[in-house]
Image (cartoon, rainbow, N blue to C red; front, side, top):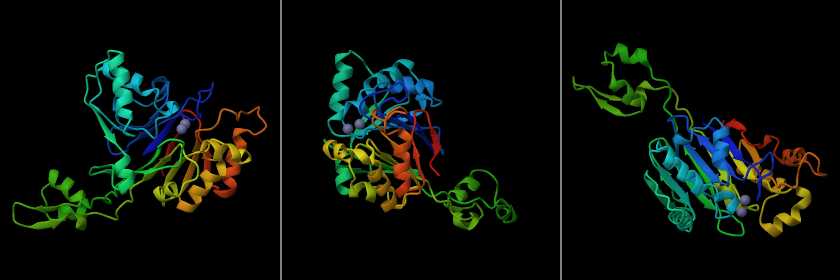
Length: 312
Ligand SMILES: [Zn+2]
Ligand SMILES: [Zn+2]
C-alpha cells in the first residue's frame, strides 16, 4: 500500500501546501481511501496520479473547515462524472448533517450510494470501525478543541507463496481449488480427500499498517492507536520553540509527534499539518521542524503536497 499527501498545511492553504487530505491506495484491490478532505482536494486529486473514481471510503478526523470544506464539492463532482460505485463516509456524528445540508441547499442529488458511519461508538468501545477479508480499520479519540479522531488501517496477514509443485505432485486438479488453498481454506476434493490450505503455503506475510493522527496535542490514545505501526502520519503544526501555542490551540509540536512515534514503537513517522508560519524564509524553517523531530525519532520525514510514500 502507499499514501499520497494531497494537502499538508494547517488551517489555511498556501502556494505550496493545500489544506488537509491524504489518499491511501490499497494494494490488493483497485481502491483508494481518502483521509480528510479540505477545500480544493478535488483540484489536488486532478493534479495527482490518484483516480477519483477509485475512491470508496472517506475518513474524516473532525469538523474543522480545513478538513471538510472540500467534501461537498468532491461528492458532487463524483456524481456528475457518473463513475462512482458508491462512497462510505466515516466521521463525527454531525458530519452527515453538514454534508446533507450543503447538498440539499445547493440542489445537488447524488446518483450513487452514499452512506454515513458515525465513529464515536467505535472509538469509545475500541472495536473495529470496518472489517472485511483483507482489511480492518479502528479509530481513537484524540485531544483537540472539538471531538477529533485518529484512524488506523491494518491490512490482514497475507498467506505465503503457494507451493505449486506440491499441489501438482498430489494430482490436485488445477483451477479455482488452487486459489482456495492459497487463501488458507480447507478444501474437499471430488475423490474425497480433504486438504488444508496452510499445508500448501509458505510463511505468512505480515500485513501492513498505517495510522493517521490529526488534529491533536500529544495524546496517550494516539500512542495506543499507533502501537508497532509501520507508518505513522502525525500532525506537527508547531515547532518545539512554539510549544506555548501548541498547548493553547491543542495542536502538536515536532517533539510531541516524535514522542508519539517513539513510545508507540512506530517504524516510520511523517509530519504533516504544518503551520503556514514556517517557510524557507522564516526564522524557523520547515527543515528545522524535521530536524527537531529527528533528534527524538530519527526515521522521520516531512510531508509535502503530492509526496507518495510506501507504507513499508
Ligand atoms: Zn486542521
Ligand atoms: Zn482542527
